[in-house]
Structure formats: C-alpha cells, structure tokens
Image (cartoon, rainbow, N blue to C red):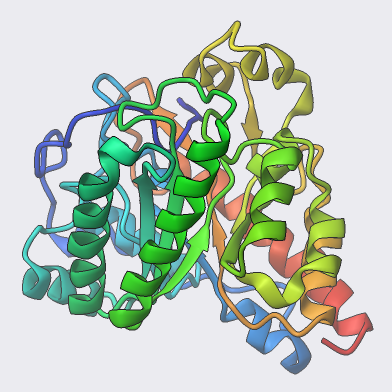
Amino acid sequence: MATVGFESEPCEKLPVNSCRKDPPISMVMFRPYLSSYDQPMTTSFLKRIASAPISWGICEVPGWGAMLPTKRVLSEMTSLGLPATELGAPGFFSDDSAELKDQLAEFNMSMIGGFTPVVLHDKSQEKATIEMALTTSKKFQEIGATHFVSCPVQTWDWANPEELSNDEVAQFFKMLAQVDQICKDHGLVQVVHPHLQTVVETKKDIDMVVDNSDVMWCLDTGHMTIGGQDTVEFAKKYASRVGHVHLKDVNMKSVPPVLARQQSIMEGVQQGLFTPLGQGDVPILETILALEAAGYQGWYVIEQDVAITGEMPGLGEGPISGMKQSVDYLHNVVAPALAKIGK
C-alpha cells in the first residue's frame, strides 16, 4: 500500500537504481490519459500540469520505501498527460546531463527544475551556499531546466528553525539576492519555497521575505496552508510574484503535532498529513482560479508525496492511483470552473 509521504528530510543520496531495476519499457507503458472534460478554453491550463518523482514515492531518505524504476515512473507520468517533471531525489535520474536528457526525450518530457535547500542566514555557510547554488544552476542549465526552487533551511541537516537575529536577517537577504543573481546568470528563475521545518515556514516568515525582497515565489498550497498563509489571499495579492506552483492538499487535523515538533514530519505523513487534491482542507480550486484570473501562466506541479511501504505495486497500481485522483480533480473540477470564467 502507498502512504502519503514528504519530499525532503535530512537524507543521504539514493543509490542509483537501488531497488529500481528498469524493466523493458513495453512492460510499463499505459494508455494516454483521456480527460472526461476537454474544452479549448482550458487547454493552456491542462498543458501546464506537471508532477515530481516524490509523487511516485521517490525519496532519498533511508528506509523511505520501495523505489519504482525510473522508466516506469516517467511512463506513468506521461500516461496521465503530464509533460514535465521536477528533478527529484539524487540518483533517480542519471547524474550525467546528456544521459538525463535522453531519459526525458524517450518520453517526450521536459525538466522544470528542482527543490534545492540553501542556508542563507548563517555567515559561516556562505561559501557552501554559493557553491551549492552555482553547481545546481549549472546542472539545471545543462538539462534545460527553468526553475531553481530554493528552500531556506536552518542547517544542511534540517535542524528545527530558530528565530533569526538582526545580523542573521541581514545575511539572509544578502545571500537570497546572491542566489537570485546566480540563477539569473544561468537563465533560471529562483522561486522561494515556504516549507515545514524551515526558516520560511509561517505566514510571519513569508511576510518578512515578501516585504524585504523582490524574489519570486513557489506557491506551495500545502506548506503555505500549514504555516497559516491563506493561499487564495496570497494568489490575489502577489500574483505577479508567483513564478511556480506546487499543488498539495492537506488533512489539517494532522498538522498540530507536527507544527509543535511533537511529531516528526514523517510520522505526520504516515498518519495522513497529505491527501489527493480535492480531498483535504486546502482551497485548491479557489487558489487556481485566483492565479489564472490574474494571468499566471506557469507550471502547476502536483506534489502528492507518497511512500511505498509494502510490496512493490503491480503495474497500474500504487502511487499512480492517487495521482489519477488528483489529475481527475484538475480536469473535472478545476477545468470546468475555469471555463465558466473564460480562462
């Protein structure tokens, strides 16, 4: 059985192809996804729905669960009509840029970019952060990616966030600007990702960064909601600064012990923290309507974190089942609503 998961905790690199020997592609191909709702007005929106390997349980955290083969994951993504993906855990795609591009080309997919933890507030980590930004930006440039999804963490091993001193705040914004410039130099857009257990976790944190920088944002519907940020309000007020969107739904009843650090994120996840789109407490529809009404034309990446904790699922089973529920929600609930407002 697949259980809801979490995309990034302190972890080690996933061994390439560990527990994921790729079967012949003929074994994993599925029929292309056919929506029961297909209107010309919503073509643009539907073509901008993408996903990430974590939605198929791909995570580098030791003991996370069974790892599906790369070809199977990409095949299932395309079977759902998803034309692009984020990079995901180290080792899932080839480390060689040319080989990675071939992996994508086999399924006619494109690479959006990826989630990148950065330590911005700690002056002692300035060199390491710059090196991380340079290395990652160069890699993204080589593989044709467009987005550098930065996540400001307390420490590289994801210690619980602490209130920043005035000097740390100044260092934070200095480094945020430097990372932004590195991204621009490599043809990338940096988008800041609010996230549980990070320096930008709560609405207060988000307000601080919004008010003191001109950086673009990854509007993550799940993590923002958990942190107390109304995503519809953010979409309406700061639409011009939204450069990327992660769609994630949340069972808010599972949130309090996680926010209070009484429960680890993984424990919360295993108890149903995240749900398929439309089945939790996040205003997914209203947030998308607000973004589209404001002219947003970027990606909507479905991040439906799962962990395969039982046996390896058979073809057509496992994470794809929950993902199909999310895709169906976007096609059959969101798309008709967009058509009604002429979007």
